[in-house]
Image (cartoon, rainbow, N blue to C red; front, side, top):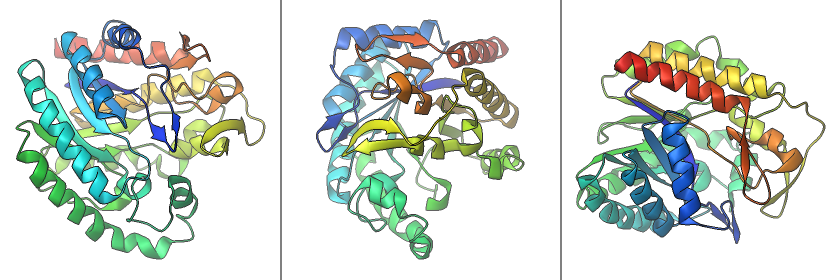
Length: 324
C-alpha cells in the first residue's frame, strides 16, 4: 500500500460532549510522532468537529512529514452547515499543501451523522431506526450524490488537492467527481467470504481506493460484528456509561483481525488504508472492550498499547519494506 494510515480523533462534539479533552497540542504532537515512528504510518486521517483543531493537528502532522487526510466528523449538522464547514476547511487546508500531501475527505457516513438523509433527529435515532426505515434506503443515493456533487464543486474552487469521501457501501456514491474512492469497510461474519473479492472489485474500477475506516473492538466475538461492535455501549444522554451485558476481553482477536485486513488490502491493490482508530478516550476502564483503539485509554488521558498496536506496527513495517 502506498499510504499506511490510522485515524486520529481531534474531538467529536456531540451535543455538548467531546471525545478529546483536554485539548493539548503538545500531547497531540507526541501522539502523532508515535503514529509515525512506532506504528510506521506515513499517513493520518484526522477526524473531528472543530476546523481549528483539525488544522492544528494537520500542521503538526505536516511537520512530521505525514500525509494528511482531513475528515470532518460532525454531530447532527444540517446539510447547509456541513457544506459551509467543508468549504471553510478546504480553503484553510490549501496552503498546507505546500508542506505535505493533503487529501480533503468530505465527511463520513453522511446518512447517519448528518440530518436530512434518513429519518431521525439524532445520530442515535438514525442508527437505531435503520432496520425500521429500510424503505428509505433506495432513495439515499440520489440525496447523497446531490449533496456531494455540490460540495465537491465548491471545495474545488478553493482547494487544488485530491478529494474523496468516507462512504458506507449502501449510500451508493457516484465516484465520478472524486479523485479517490473512499469506503468505510468494516468486515462482518455475514460478508467475510466475499470481502476480499468486494475490495478487489472496488480497485478494478480504476481509481485509487482508500479504506477510510476498518477495525475491530476489543472483546471476544467483535471481529464478526464489524462496526456493530460499538453498539454494546449504553449511553446516559450522549455520554457512554456502561456495557449492555457481559463481554470477554480479547486483545488477540483485535490484533489478528487487523493483521488479516491489512493483508487483504495489500493483496488486492488498495492505495491507502486507515485503521480505526489510535485511541478512543471516552471508552475507559470496562468500556475499553467496546473501543476500536489500538491503545487502551485511561481517564487521565494517558494510554498503553494493546496487542493491536504491535500487530499494526509489524504489518505496516512489512508494507514499507516492500515499497522500499
